[in-house]
Image 1 (cartoon, rainbow, N blue to C red):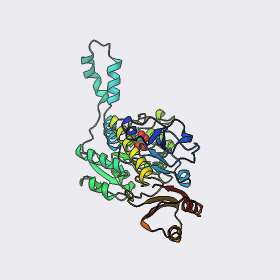
Image 2: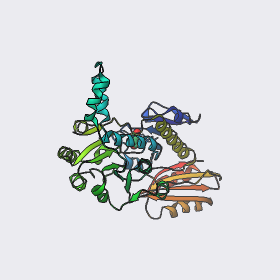
Image 3: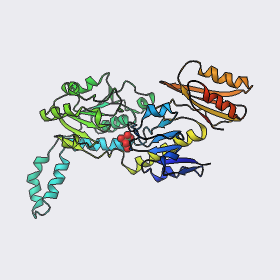
Length: 388
Ligand code: MLT
């Protein structure tokens, strides 16, 4: 029987080609065992009981009900880093768009296309579009994940004075970051000294509205704020006031909404950060390989609601994967169940994340229906899958 995959948004062909004959693309979500999604909002969707996994071809997961999925044993994946270069390039371009009135200049040329003396008129008109250079300016990066680090390195190579803040900086990202980037301990330090600020953090309850009056008041006059993460990280009412007063000189945002498109001194792009062939291909390939690894081996890589668990490929007779609550005594009860039937556990991996945990058990015999039913009936067990 093939595994049914539903695509809620168009997914790059090179990713779908990685699905072998054991997979089938289905149109109906109600039949799906796996969902591939980009920006479709899933919060009000009925999640079918058949659904095992959702993979978002992108980094942000605010369109997916993570807790509801975790409660049903549905593992949600994202594709960290897969579109980071695409976003980085647009952030750099946006700094240049903010520093110089390139769009105004382009518009002027279009508006004056019938002027026979346009070459001469341009020399007079151009002073209206003059700007500044980014070299030597201070750039503050809030969030040094895959995107933030690429922006830091690129800006550093362009001669900017780069500062970053990230209390959760990973060793991998730290190792990839130029040593010329100065780390600071708080966003406030960035607010106080930087000419440009760019934000690369996920939208969470704790980050929503983090750019508000209090934050703007701490910033340098005329600061340029770049937002390629999510619009609601910014309190747009407070931002409007800050833009009108000149406290914030320019806002560049990749999320059009009724407010952002009407803000003064604002450049809005239509969520283009990751809209490159390369990013779309990378995201699709990573999302499909995460789904395949989970379906075929039970392993979890890059989940945002369950722990990452890697038990490799099963070399014993049977493998069972259990999504469960992160409460005491679960492992004792699992092992006791197998011991009762004299089934040896050859390998066991257990990891937790917040309220949820995931256990892979490699056993020396086939898993029987009886054992599966007993596991399913245990208090705290959310979902049991026989992988082999
Ligand atoms: C992301 O979350 O990865 C970016 O916003 C790009 C996208 O959503 O496609």
